[in-house]
Image 1 (cartoon, rainbow, N blue to C red):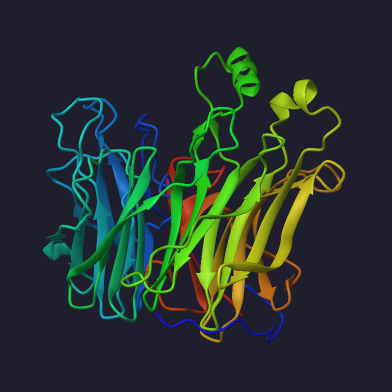
Image 2: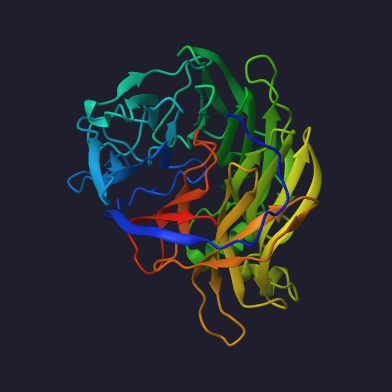
Length: 451
């Protein structure tokens, strides 16, 4: 994967929506996951002129957790989508990320359970299936990653899949409980040539110190450098907040998503990952953070993208009186593991506006321009509801262009893109797969040309 450095604006942005269409519909599996659950990876790739998407099919005769199977779709040249693959034997819980190489190989990360039908949970066997983009109906060849030791993986894999499409290399992450990530790297010859264990950071400052499990990993791979952006996902560590939430929800648990961590290695084969670095936190006011995306430039700059809210509104009156509830889409740039720029790309909330910026993704063009495609909800100045996607350009020096509305008939509130992290080449076409508030449980595709 060859990525160019970020350049300046080359002209006004005018996105053109060329295609909007349905890919498939699904029914809820009630197993804690869904088609967009693997949000740190992607379920859509572009291979030359072809676009592929993976999906989930619920098996209603089975009980959770492992009650879905993967589907593989290809977009037809004349428009619309055809089913070109389905898991006829296995069962799983989570969606299956996709990656691709420039030479036309397609990879599907799967995690079939090893348990009998209707068993609630248990061991699973992570595999990668290799397809040919030219003939995906021929089926996928099973690849077995190499792992350090014998990790007892389960249906809760929180997998992260990344590819260097130009070099033909693959990197797979799989979680081991609340302890660590195991990773396996496949070289251009097809050998799983490196493997390791990435321990989670330790939350020594908590009332009861514990490892900070980091989930939904956003993983990037470029010229053997590897990057990981993860979000804290642990049971509420503050006893007083946990007790009050229990009173409100009647649930015995409530998870904390409010500390953002990053690590990297300049060479996945020869260099260990750096210690985890905390990039952002909303720990003091029980806020919320979503890790969204990362992009690595050829000049060594690494761009991170995340969304955050300032506090948990349920706790404000009791614990944070007078604090404002705000929302922001945030961006920063690192060099050699050090943050050198920060920029708030969009914001809203009390004292700012009624807008609520949501999920966003980076998109790079062949000229080296870097854009952010994101969702915005909330209300406008007149109190009218907002539900739209917007696009802005990231500029040098911690700046960005004004956002423009993308004229989609059906906006995406949650989505994947054909990203460089999955091996896709930089392109003037932005491919989007996701769903929105107007069409729930319907996965839709849009092709947007950036002009």
